[in-house]
Amino acid sequence: MFRPAALFIGLRYTRAKKRNHFISFIALTSMLGIALGILVLITVLSVMNGFDKEINKRVFSMVPGITATTNANFISNWQEAQAIIQKNPSVIASAPFVSAEVLLTNNGIVQPALVSGIEPKEEAKISELPSKVVQGNLNDLVSGKFGIVLGQDLADHLGAVVGDKITIVTPQVSLSPGGVIPRFKRFTVSGIFKAGNGFGFDMTLAFINLQDAQKLMIMGPNVTGLHVSIKDVYAAPRIAHELNDSLGPTARMQDWTDQFGAFFHAVQLEKTMMFFILMMIVVVAVFNLVSTLVMVVNDKESDIAILRTFGATPGMIMAIFVVQGAIIGVIGTIIGAIGGVIMALNATQLVNWIERVFDVHFISSNVYFVDYLPSQLQWMDVFQISGCALLLSLLATIYPAWQASRTEPVEALRYE
Image 1: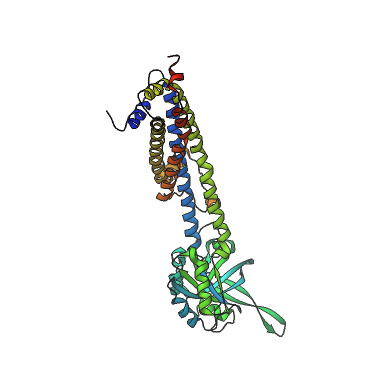
Image 2: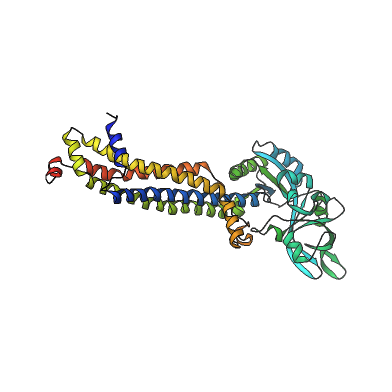
């Protein structure tokens, strides 16, 4: 005889009989419900992972992991501070900068902006700004030429193109016989960068050469601070604390979480809540599985009674129906996982095909940072979702199997 007997009988009960097509249909719907829930959950989480990846790329391509400055808002001997920072094993590179909020004017149009003085070669080590320049070249920011690289939206708002002259008005003032007047300087637009929509980088940022910025802001050899690129951006608070200890009590550290931490926390919370909400689809299918097994137990009362008279123990009876429920759960999970992986890997192409065929546009870069549906499959999500579905399926078999084990042979066979 097939061993173990509980496995053989459980497998046998999963097959449709002439007199229980309805029960088999309910079992099939339970299986498909579990599969559908897993498929949707894997696909949705993959899409959210894709958006998370795009947001990270958009933010960390322009925002440094850590910014080091002092309580006085400038560093006098920045080369020494840079050498200390570079000794930290978590640091990739660092670069000096001078920044100030200024007014940009062109043809009567005035726009506030944050201007940063940088060394192009050093900036390339800590950010992706050089690759974001769509017109001109970042290396054109040469000391003494007073060139400026504008964000795409900022240039459009000012009506400026490469080669135009724009005026920077600084917060510093100069004394003259006519009184106090603001300092200003003409700069030539030498490039335009495009970081993408979503965080306003293209509208608020502009870059000039470091030495030009020091002259404009009357800072001499001083710099505002140092931008620091680190290996693990999610460890920025810890690394910032370490650097603060290394640089001394006058140092002041800021990391990306000070500006964007709440936003990223909200995105992660949204993903977590989406997981639990969509898991309810699987839970509903599991409840359907409970109903299926209860009906199977009622339908098989006489069979259970005969097995008991042949010497089957209550534990064996429980095992039979646990096997049956587990088979439904395992098959549903496998189908859902395979379907979810296929959908997640092809979600972008599928949405693009739908947009092309039906001439619709679902994703707008003005709202979602990108103009396509991103998807990134993470196998850990697949394993966690599949594991939860299998666990719920096994838990669903406990009550029906326990009910079957309590069947009394005499009562069940009385009217047979």
